[in-house]
Amino acid sequence: MVTPASTPGPVPSPAPGPVPGPVPGPASAAVTVPRTVRIGYGVGSVCTATFSTVPGLLLLFYMTNILAVPAWIAGLVAFLPKIWDVVINPWVGQRSDRTVSRFGARRPWMLAGALFLPVTFAATFAGPPLTGVPAAVYVAVCYFLTATAYAFYEVPYKAMPAEMTEDYHERSSILQWKMVFVGLAILVSGAVAPAIAGGDVAGYRLMGLIIGAVLLASMLASFLGTAKAPVVARAEAEPSIRAQFAAARTSRPFMILLGLSCAQMFSAGMLLAGAPYFATYTLRDPGATTTLFLCIVGPLLVTMPVWIRLSRRYDKRGAMILGSSLFFAGTVAMALSGQFGAVYAHGAVLLVGIGYAGLQLLQFSMLSDVIVYDAAVTGKRRAGVFTGLWTAAETVVFAFGALVFGWLLGVAGFVESDPKTPVEQPESATQAVLYGGTLIPALVMVVAIVLTRRYTLTAAEIEQAGKDAQAA
Image 1 (cartoon, rainbow, N blue to C red):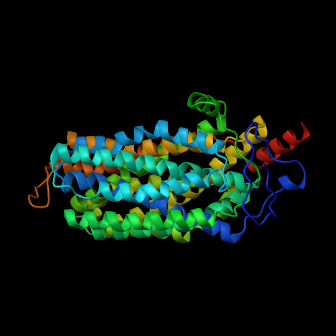
Image 2: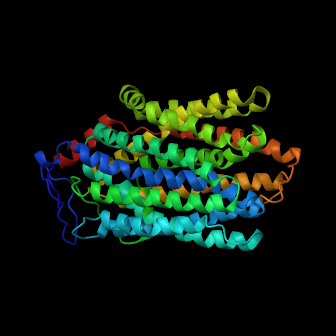
Image 3: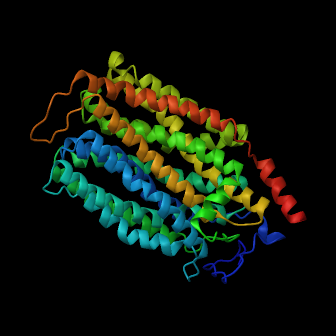
């Protein structure tokens, strides 16, 4: 059923069977989402940003420099559990599309994730009395369970904006609140988590417990804060995972957006995995991991209004190209940090942060546009289908960046260690950290820019598709 924007209470669940599209007439007009719901939705991104940041930043380093896991094995451990996302994320999307409950379709799944994710996350960084391959196996099992719990929360969470309003720019406003909390989360996770972890097992164990508590608070707050979220249309489930992939392939805007975002996430994942190594072996200051992340989080907190204005003036595609170009320029500049020192390096990372802020906002806003456009063209609401596939691809590719970086270190002769037996790395390994960890992300970002130029979906095109659907 479609709930009008003026309905104050919880959204009634639809009956099983075919799900109608937007109701014609006033009920399908643009819905202004209440500020309390925007905040309630936005606070949930503390979980998504923290979970993306902390393992991406610390998991590889935790294994190679704390648990003495060889770099190439550590890269596999960080990557392989994410392959499971290709199965579990579309499945969760499909099931949440079909869910009928007094909490709505999405929120029961979010609650399930909230109950399990903090526990499995803390276990991942518990620091068992193991080293080498046995330690890698332990981390792999825990991280596999963590990825599963995260899918339960993240897939339905990302499906919600497209169901709250039909308005092109209103969705960007909803996601602006999300980005505020993303910035705050990266400030906490990117700056505080490495400081808590320090350089020993006890520090990583404490970090896992504290970050686990942050995840729990964020997810429960979002579950409660979205209780009165408007629902202008419900999604329609595809009958199988194969049908979900087939449905996605019929949407050219989705496939292009998926490709460009995968390129962006690979670059970000590789850069993030390399950050502690960059601080330790290029800047010769492990503590610089915290300040480098402050250079990234600052733009996230202050540039969101600017990116909103840029997306309105140059459309989202133009703003996305600008953000990708800034990211590219910053990573290329980072490769010169060995010659120009730490202050220069932080300036280059700040440029990366400005571009990354735009990418974070625009990716999710454009995904919501694609979902709405697809509904107008096909007559189906497939938010869970698209967000399930999107989240699976995003997490797999982000982890693949860490895998490639781990393999790069292994090929370059990086020597694993533990805090009791630090080692001096060969020149080839430090050069791989500096150049491979910056120039490879820059080259892949060029692919993202090329693909963005092929993305043609605009506000006018979405509006026209809606008019055509109503006329039909």
